[in-house]
Image 1 (cartoon, helix red, strand yellow):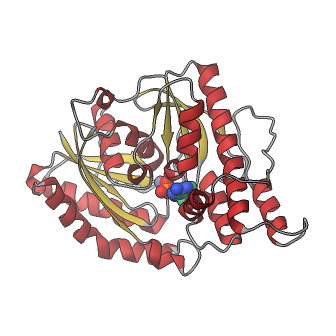
Image 2: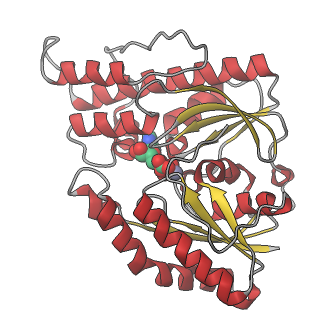
Image 3: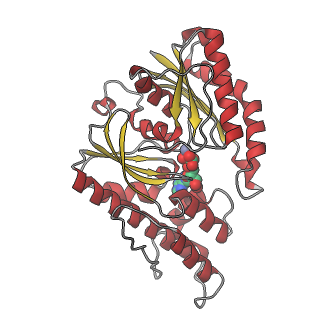
Length: 336
Ligand code: KG4
Ligand code: ZN
């Protein structure tokens, strides 16, 4: 079964083609990051307009990469939430038009669930890892809008064990990136700067203590960085040192809590999901400290893409999830 997945929830217009929920055939991502960078964040109205412009060229490119035409598709999948309303509407309406005109099923996908299914994508069917993660799996979900610890007990079965009390991990990276004058988005910029600088040499920033065993908090850390940058805590260290100490603190909190949750829930594997999963320090530390196998998709499949939406849709479709053409967006959709 060949599924086309459409993703427009934020600032990437993305379309992927996936066979049988796991075999990656094509993935095209048109990023608007340059457009929004000058405003220091995503401007919703501009994002929607750009999605409209990019949709058809991205579809053409995805089909060219897949080596098939529209008649080679078996289902149309689309992100219907969470995300920016106007941006979601562009993708959902485009998907409806395609599904209607081709007479194909329209499969609605939760963007967060889509991120998790990046863990099922592979290009080589002879690789034993292509079977996908085993259940129960512990998902460390870290993106621009979410930081959750979720136990995945089966396809489509999620139990949220912990979440952030304030900022999401990606949001914290973006805010600290801005404080350090690194532009937007801060996550990849901090990752690159620290990769050149190395570990923090003198500075150690605090880890939040919380009542919830698997909950996170990053806003205190961000405020601490802000105070240091403003010189309220003495001479400020150079940006690279501060970025390294910040990244170490975030990664330590994320990994420590995820490992604890995995041990206490008997998880057989840990899946790293969401845009922040592209972070090289997070990937390294999780691999180093995890006693159970970890599934970490390549960085380009961790950030928003259409292939993960198509992979997820395969399992939603198998569970009987097909949307009517009256499908509406759900900007505040959750997982678990
Ligand atoms: O999942 P995603 O692409 O979009 C959302 O659904 O939110 O995540 C975007 C977030 C941004 O906050 C971005 O700064 C962060 O992921 N991010 C990173 C890295 N690449 C993307 N954060 C840290 N290190 C990275 N390499
Ligand atoms: Zn995302």
